[in-house]
Image 1 (spheres, one colour):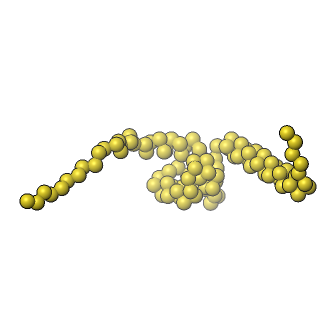
Image 2 (cartoon, rainbow, N blue to C red; image 1 turned 135 degrees about the horizontal axis):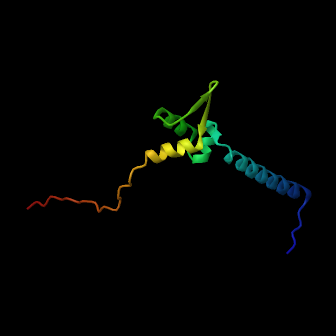
Image 3 (cartoon, helix red, strand yellow; image 1 turned 180 degrees about the vertical axis):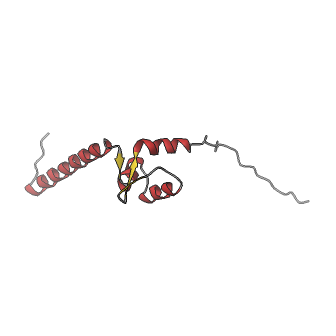
Length: 102
């Protein structure tokens, strides 16, 4: 199978591939750092930036170096694990009550 692309399509594909590779390299580099900033740690845990701020208000460990807040992946993982609770079964049948009138 052969594809024929014009110059603009070829440029668009090259740009797309280059951006994907750059993002992958950036993510791989970021994931090897033990401490991340708020935006990076939010992405690492898959939550919103505001969630990180909220967790910090609940006592999540934060390193404050010269006014810059850094978040340790290991310490936050431990902190989250310490807050885990057994899940509640959600498979309960709902109770339906009715009134019968004569």
